[in-house]
Image (cartoon, rainbow, N blue to C red; front, side, top):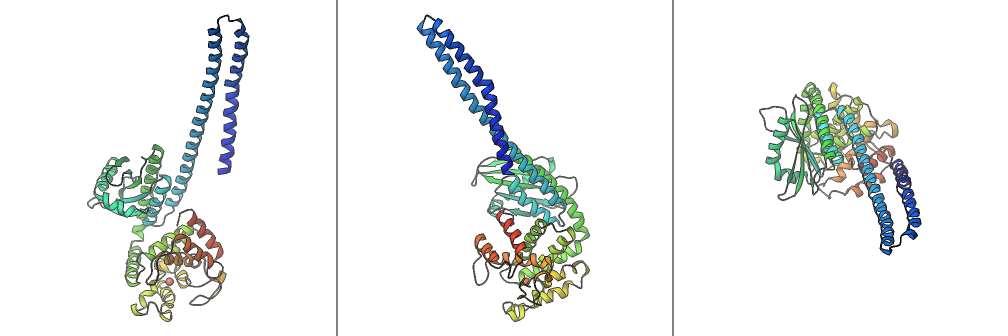
Length: 414
Ligand SMILES: [Fe+2]
């Protein structure tokens, strides 16, 4: 793509030059030749100098115009390329959001894509499903998202209310502490949930194209959220039950709060990148959220004893395989600690005998564990965690899955 663009730019540059040569240089040469003939006929020396000056000034003006024209054309092409990239991304987002199995996936995707299509530093989704209730923070993304939101929550919530009521995006600049440029783009649709995408960056104001992209993203997100919400109502019972179990797990497994949700998010991204169909993505989502559900049967005092905690995948499988909506996720849970070389547990199966979902889950689970501070060590940096994952490619992990994972990490998607 970039090579094609570079070739396009070169050919455009050539066209500008040829046009300038034919339209500027050739007439100028003609004018210079004519002046050379006229010059000796002029008796007055001042008139001669004036003619030479006129030719020189015309030449300089023509050259300056050439560079200005070239600059304008190249700037327009760069902007066109940026718009195309943004359009490409928005088409990708539309597909991703349209296929989202769960409203939280829509929220996470929207917050993520807001940083990319809007060149924002942080993004938030504020929404409500009941008009009587206040707007709640559904999701956020960006290193400083929490701090900025804490500082501006009241002001932004009021603007979300206004944007949602008027169905119009609002751009503001906050000159207080952080000097933020902020866009509040309403989620589309007459139905609930009602709310807005908020995107902010430090420094430069958002350009019109970026505001348009964020508004389009918010509109797509609103439609996807409404659809996902309908699906969510149907799956309400199981979703709430899953959330309940996940929150019980967060409390039960020390130092791992939020682990299941983070693994589910990266497994979802991996599944999409690998082109898995909706049904497998759905099962992978539940398997990711519930992969350590068996830990609930391991007493707190034995959580770090391999003799006990190694049983958690079997316990988890037993629980899930009895419940129809989770039964297809059960094998992924059973096998998420198996290794490609057969040295894993509980059954020591190897290679393709381990189901694809479990092989994806193994990488995402380990990645989050490495990136999170544990009771006996600090969190690893992205680089160190990736090195660790790659060092175990082929032995513990499926190399193809590691390669896809590495690509997503390098693209900043994980
Ligand atoms: Fe586990």
